[in-house]
Image 1 (cartoon, rainbow, N blue to C red):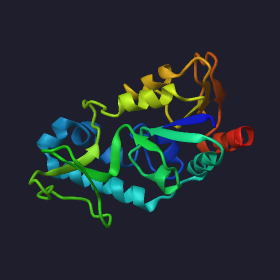
Image 2: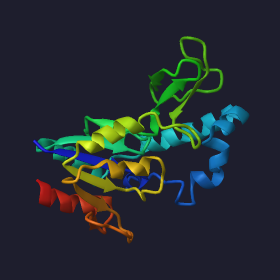
Image 3: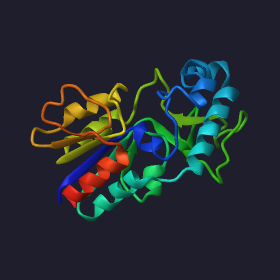
Length: 224
């Protein structure tokens, strides 16, 4: 059974109604990156950061997986499927996918500032300032902020190395270091890039100039 690896980014979730910081609208207009998505922002105003991620969690809960998410799950009927995602939402999981590695953390989890242990959010109730882990440390978003290391990057690289088919979808490949994962593919790996925009220097990659759902629907016809 061949291995399909899906590398997904914000464009995947955008079709479900979640805005990205590159959109220049919505949440990111009200909350600039440097005020809510950096370690410095956390040290300066923890309450503001928690409020921002509370809103993001609420937005994620309101939306549903789109057709692209569902087709990726269908691939599991014929392939070993592993997803490496830059997204912090749980739409892949809600569509049924069973093997998902989140490079940048998960919005439905929080992390202890002292131990680093993570905890699932219960009843969609996001923590506030003064909510602590069992060891007595403040809980923070389980999200990799700008300026922080990406602890799952090496795991992602190992997954990509084993891909017979790599599908890159919904990402501009401009977010580093995650964008470097494409360079870990083996020589015989078939690489599809699903993106409605023009992409320079494609080399041997197959570019489907479509949005996520259209591109995955076309790939479904080819791969299934």
